[in-house]
Length: 492
Image (cartoon, rainbow, N blue to C red; front, side, top):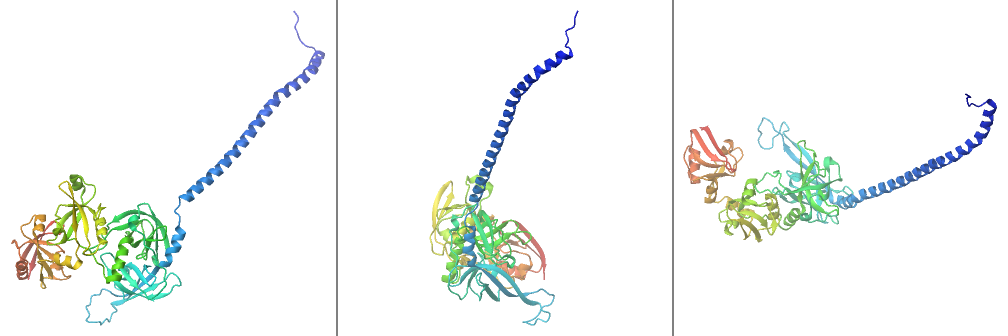
């Protein structure tokens, strides 16, 4: 058997024949492969360039969209309003506490001294009327106004001050001043951009931006008999020194006067509060025309509906009437305790703050139309408001004063007796600081229904009993909120 194998000569001849063939084969094989790689490379490069262009375009579009989403007019609004906002310096005399009591003005240990505080104000007329907060000018011996432009200083006089709204109007002797335009604060909506312009921490002409975060806020900051609290809440940064400054819209028009901040530190922590421009405008006009604010009173008291009462009545909005002054406007119009006021002059009332704000636009003698809910029925009642003086007279009706006890004593009317579930009771009013009643710890509006276990219906009889009381005596009564309290003390 022969094995089939190649000899060296045969192999050499074979190689010579195969090599040209392999070269051709390699060329045929590699050329398409190279072409494929080259095509793939060019495709990827083209795609990358396309993506890069697309990304740049997309980024540009996004940037433009972002810019267009920003509020317009911040620069213009700031330029328009800052010349109208002034710096106010309040120079006053303060009394420092010490353990000595001195007569007249003798002050050997310097218990009195000069104090300076600062705030902001807004020019509302070209002839020098300036609106600010009452607390900015309170107690001033001298008020100095510094203009934004030129830093020129003027001594200001007070035209009117109203603690109930915390507003005051000043006047400087100047002409051709830049003055701010009023916007309608009713048109302001939650989410609208606003700017706060003022002088925080003595940093003059400072502008901060934010949005309206709420309207109709009552924060119980005005501690007086007839407060108006219906603040615009904003997250534009407001700090000490901003008080009395302007809250403006993006047109540079006034929508509010910055008044307070919500803070545990005294500095801005997230929310500021401004008096709506519609209230400001009305009060400015009253100050200029009358030198005082013409407040409208309806002779009633009402509070926000509780969740339980709201569900029971099937109402989402409204305030519950819980007191009617006898012979007052509301009484004359037929409004009753238990009625729910759901509209005032056609505007929905969703809180007491909103009601107080809309009532603040009215003057004594105007006609106010109240829409009330009674027994599952809507009724309209037209009420003619009275002045603060007339309202105070109604509040004090039947009251008897005791100088010795330091308070007024007023028998409850039938409406109040029914409200509190009492047969008799006498309310304490106008309690004098440091007087006998005040030293007992009895608060304004406290109702005494028993003294030493006896009920009293006449103010004179209770006064006589209390003035003559000696030894261990007791008082039973109600706070103005209706909570029962009793006191026992020893009288000499």
